[in-house]
Image (cartoon, rainbow, N blue to C red; front, side):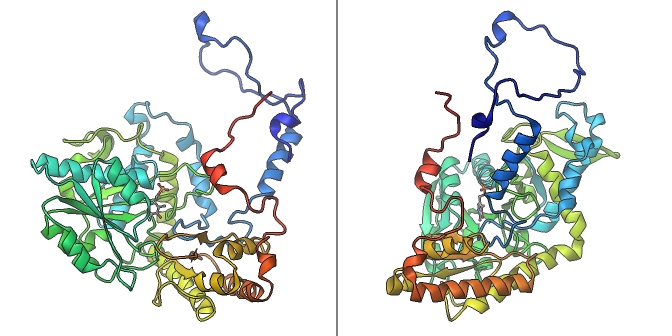
Length: 477
Ligand SMILES: *Cc1c(COP(=O)(O)O)cnc(C)c1O
């Protein structure tokens, strides 16, 4: 496919710039660039075709089933996009006086209140721009809390091995060292190992729940009390709240802070990599340490303020505001009944699809799952030489996006499937049938699977180089 620069022809440009609505400024000589930027010059129709061609080469949730586990690539209702594109939200500036952006401050205030209700927390900051950023912010809350009490020896964060990979990374970023505790045979935290790991140096625990194998830890209350008895705090990784929202609350399970990913559970598409938002909630005793600014309401007027012992800003202004607008629209549209219904359906769909595949594909854990389940293709690979990668790639030929592969790391030849709440029974039946057909193919004609997909523009890219050495600029040479 030709790139924009390759399609470009000198002089073919089309520019329709609106009239300048601010006074023209005089720039000092040295500030102006010496030559015009090299921009592609194309007619509108050619530009349109370029992007349409690109769109056809990707697979989105509008193209078909997209069962990517742990990330919740779910369908985000259009109305939320519409709300976030209202000019009253898109045409404001964060430096405007507060009295001219009362509506925007109200959106932030109400979203904070609703997320507080959903997570069982007393205060929320909307600043963090992503899940890992939320983790970092929450860990700074924990750190600042211990330090404010003169408790300087709490340097360790306990992270179960079934945690999301960002958990240990965030703990190190926040200046802690990480103690890993193993899972038990059922996929939950090994309580004996946890008891042995806590001590005077425990700053806290980070728990991904449901964990990365899709299991809600049955000992959750015991886990949080073991940590609290040791003087540590409990952090709940709620990046993916899709299994529990409106059903149970981290705050009721003994957690002191939590982050949620608005770009997973609360209706911002994140297929292209952003923008995201990872609000952090905390119990009242941590609220003074939250980032600034926070929004408050008094005498019917919304205003920004800095919490007493604030850690400062973790991002510019109020965070990714338009993502917050989508989340508020989503929560208000679903309402108090719709929120738990979405989660219950997500869990039901995952269990339904798992039941269709069970007995044919090997499940990593023989238990009821939450919003996603993990299969292990270790035996298939051993017996027939067909790997998880081959099965995942073959799905593309039938218009299904591959599930997450080789994650979680503690399961070999893993395929992690998350159907999400909006998929119909017919879609799940059809997808399960395809999975079973591919299993048959693997056993009879495994060789063909090594070359799948057969019908895609790009089949098996060099993923390491694509991730480590992406080519993001055009070389004019
Ligand atoms: C996605 C995810 C994260 C990280 O969120 P980002 O927005 O990608 O930084 C953390 N924990 C869990 C459980 C996740 O699913």
